[in-house]
Structures are given as C-alpha cells and as structure tokens.
Image (tube, rainbow over all chains, first blue to last red; front, side, top):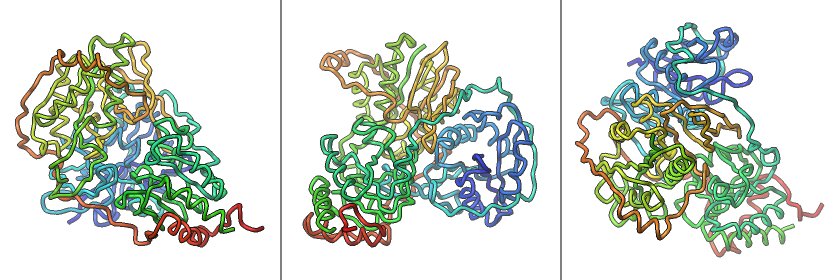
Length: 323
Length: 259
C-alpha cells in the first residue's frame, strides 16, 4: 500500500535544517519509499528557494508562495501546510517537534478536525489508522497512541531517526498562497539572539549539569567543585534556570544550548526529552540520580543510583585523589 | 474583555507512577494543578492587574474532583471558574478536550486565553493551539515574555539554539506559556478565604462519540540505553569505580593529573 506523506521543510542559513532531513527519512519509511514523500516550503517569493530543490530529496517539492510567507508565522505556515496537504492528497503531515511544530501542528490539526500525535519517535500504519510511539510524563514513559482519522498530523522528535542524505527533488510545483498578509492574526516582528547559546558551554570539553533534584541553590557549590576538579564548566536543566538558581544562559536542552562535550555529568537531572536533545552529542555521559527509573540513565554510559548530595562530593574527592 | 486561563488537574509529579493497561495506575495518587498552568494563571492575573482585562476566568475539563484545581486558581486571585465535568478517561483525546474548552471559551468574551505549554502527564502540548485553531484566534506557543501594547499582545518565543522570536498577535489570542515566563504567586490566606465565595459554573460534557482524535494503546517504561552501566556500592566505592571509566570513556585528563 502506497501512501503519500507531507513534511514541512524549514529553511536554515545555508539550505534546510537537519530536522527537515529527519522528517524526510520518517516520511519515506511511512510512505514505503521516497516516491510517496512531498515537502512543503512556504516562501515569500519562489526565487528564494532557488538551489533548495537540489538538496531536498522528496518526490515533490511544493512551494507555497505569497507575501504572507515572507516572514514565518504560526497561522501563515499552518495555512501553507493545509494548502499543500490538499494539493498533494497526503494522508499524513509530519512536522518537527520544536517551537515551529508546537505552533503549527495544532492549528493544522484543528482545521482537519483531529488532534496531533506529538513528541513522536516511531510511526507505523495498521488497519484502523496511524500508530505513533511518543514520550509521555516528561519522558518517564513511552506511550503508543493510534490516530484513527486520516489525514493524521504528527510532530517528530529530533534525533529519533537518522537524517536522509541531501539530494534533488524530483519535481517542483509552485502554489499561490491561499492567504495574504492581512488574513493573518500574527506577525513576526524580529528574531534575535537571546545570548543563551553561550560559547563557553558549547566549546567545553567537560560539562557538569545541575538538576532540580539538588534541592536548592545552596547545593550548587558542590557541583562547581566537581566541575573544577574535572576541568569543566557548570550547566543546568531548565528547571534549575527557571527557578533562578543559575542564569538562563547555562540551560542545556532544546530551548537552550546544545552541547557535545567529551564528558557530560548529569547531577540530579531526571532527563526530560527536552534536556536529552541538548546533550545527545556528548561522547561519555555519567548520570547521578536517586531514582533508578529516571530516563537520564537511558542516555548515560555509566550511572550511580544514589543521593546526589552524597555522591557528588565523593566523585570530586575520587577525581582529586586519582591524579 | 476577559483573561482566561486553561488549567488541568494532573497527578502529583513526585508520585511513584506505575504503568497499568493503556495508562497509569491511578489508585492512591495525589492530584494538583499542572505546573505549566500555574504560569498561565499568573499571566491572566497580571493582565487584569495591568488594566487590560475586566475579569479573570479559569476553565478546566475533568472529573468531579478536578474542581480542586479551580479552587486553587480562585485562591490565587482568579475571579471565577468553569468546570467541564467529564470522566478522566475522556481526557485521553486532546481534540475532545480542546473542543469542549473552545465551546466554553467562546462564551467568555476572552481577549487573551493562556494555557500551559504542555501537561506533565500526557504531554501532548497542543490543547491551547487546538482551541485557537477551532476558534480562529491568533496563537503563539512557548512564550517566555508577554507585553501588552496598543491593543495587541507582543509575545517572546523561545526558538532553538538560544534565539528569541518576537511575535505580535491580534486579539483575541491564545498563548501557550513556558515555565519561567513569570513567577506564579502563592495563594494567601485571605485569597483562600475569599475563594470560597467565588462562583464555579459546572457543565456536564456528553461522552465523546466520533473518535476524531487520539486513542491510547500502551504505556511503558522507556528501554534503557544498552551501554548504561550502574555502579554499585557506597558513594565512595561507586565514585572510585567511576573515575577510570570517565578517563577512558571521555579520553581526557583532569587538572589534578601530573603533567
């Protein structure tokens, strides 16, 4: 059975994002081959996509063109995706599970009178619909849901599937956008650097990350001491920066910095998927947590199950004595 | 116009969760307000305090005991509540929930509807967006900053890689907020006393019939990474076993090492 699957491609500075290639891989598996994959790219002017057709390996690249898409918005992009969905006849729409997908997927799903399957890591068809494997309970559990109504809408986790190699699109269609700028209820004013992509964190060989399980900011000193003993820097989970224990620049995760050190030590971090996305590139991962079922142990090479307040000073001591 | 907060009753995050059937074992769990939604409530209260909303309303969908989360909102300062009463099992489908919430919101003269980015239990992260889509309202997710200017709402959104998008929304709008967008207040004793006199409207929802959205199949613990090795013993023993593994695995030396 051959089914058509539509993905939303996102532009990056020099082409399209890595997430776009992961979506094409997911779509290709779901459509039983690249022939069934369509990609939609909303553009202000089709000339902007010059060159992109050479790197987007879909059977069909749909450029939804109009001034409403000169700067991306939630409702503008949703309208473009819906338009391309209809033009392609796709039975499934794949979006990235990132701030773009969080904006666009529910607006698309609402118009299709369904809910989106979100935070998805694997997909398969069965008789009564599309089965999605997804993350629930902040990453503590894996859930399977079925979306019985087609077309289905899905947001796919980053890194769940390998990225497909760049290659040319077989065909390109330009579709005039169904919406004008005045039809939109939102407007992108600007995109700016928050300073959260801190260079120190991303360039460090060793990152020691502090989590909420430390109990309070008064316990951060032991994390700093471990980082000093290892010659590394201190990072944090979102819960820690939200609580104001450490500045937001130190947050590691999908909404903060992405790090790929040689050594990553997660202290009292449970390992929500948003955090794991930010440290996935680390060479060697150590997890210290009192909950043996914490998802961070699934992302670690070595773990110590125990009270971080006891284990961290012990590790610092052992490192100092080992030299 | 009014400021509306959408809230969900979720199991206490420190509970020992056990998968059971297609969901968790719900016996002997404590429940409370979804953490993300506390930021939505604070945003609604702040909008009224800044003079941009006449009234604040909290809306929830859930079983009879979910009324407790509305009482928590009223104690924080929200003016009134709307409780859409339905079986807990019906919350499995975000589309069913969003449709019921959208129906309720459409009668509330809402200028801005705040929702938490996601629920700590199901984590679908889309009910706010679905409500916006169903009502034709403007929408922004992952809000980390909110500014009201000239009858429009300016929302700061977190993008990947530490970038911030500044988005302007026409009203009415739905905003799904990140934790950290503000500092949620605690209920004062006076607030708790006052909340007892505040009205909560109860609406019985009909059971879902069409199965338009999602259906639960299974829930399980994630598989462990094949390489994860758990070190045993006392903290000191485990720490001593850890150091050589860190050296070999990361392939680095430490500052205290001999030069």
